[in-house]
Length: 208
Length: 325
Image (cartoon, rainbow over all chains, first blue to last red):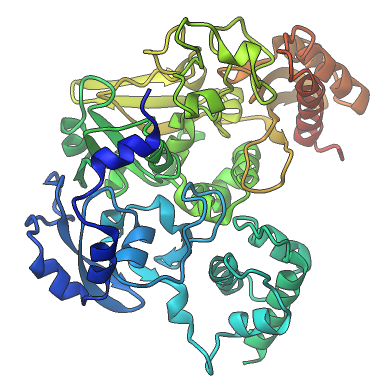
């Protein structure tokens, strides 16, 4: 019986990891035109896209971004490998840990369980949209203040889940915070700090 | 994941024309929470994936007579926040909220919940739907079976993973299955089947069909109760759904269905008989729970589930009757 690893080998594209990562730093538009891309409109009714790469435009953090993906590429892998947006993390890759949490049309989803081609025409928001050093989002700032992480690998997913939760529940109880973050897992177990951080962020966002 | 060709039709007719006549030719994509994992594990390697989320007629919740029609692509989030669902079918809203990851509720659909594949680790590990070794011997019966069936006579020992199956059966709901040549409407109780061979499926859906909608008649007092190991990102160990038609304080008729105890949702007719003609109290609910599991046949490592199923039935009855658990 062949293992999953053997099958991965059979279906691996003829591009080395080094070359693949090199390509990721190239601008999305350039990438799309420099590759032999199958002309297909992913939104066209009844039309078939693939098996090869398909040129698509994704609206990411308010900007239309051109890229080329095979239909099997997940939104998470497209963000990380094609567009160098590595904030969303690939951990379980099976929709059970939350490290890849991003927002699509204002709702949190697991980026590992959405096909990139299925996100055409939707508003995608990643952790990179929440500001950086010097201008942290209130949720990120509260995570820092309350030491709400240890290894930090789950943090971007938790911050996105917390932001989406607070958008819907601006004045939550501690129990509601607990339920609201139940789609994410922290293996270091920093849940106490995270709950404090989310409650503080809710106060600072209401007073802003 | 094997590569595939992708279709994004906007009409049901286009989508039906893109399906295959045998499993493996095409898979239907809705929420993707199960299908993508199945493809990553090479349990499903369809040649074509047909996205049905952009077909308007498959969405929406609307009144039909004194009941509701729920479109297949309605998400768990839409279902659990819908005022009519909460008022008429609290069992469904409760089951949706028990899928306690907000991300899964935002993505997952009602149709997808009914069509998701079993979580049995032998199936997910590539040993076929029945979880057998090369000689056809059940790996479940002789192996790790703590999350497997406590009812049924085999050869399928996985448990149905559906969160809504038990409640929909208790409510007397029907599903519509449509193919290019027509549609059929069947009770949800007939949608789930216990397969006899690895080539069969655990649901009545055919490869050329799409589950388009669920129609639920007016209901009595209904409730759902799940027992879980972890509160989040996990499937329940056991569940029960109850629908009570009342005449004043007396139960005129009852439907009690257990979940995650067999290859299909499992009707507890002994418990139903016990409730009929009586007034619900804690003692009666307890007895009904006992009756529900009286004929359980647990495997080597899951007799603990018998007690959990009993408690799920008891608490679902009390919750439906509005008695504090």
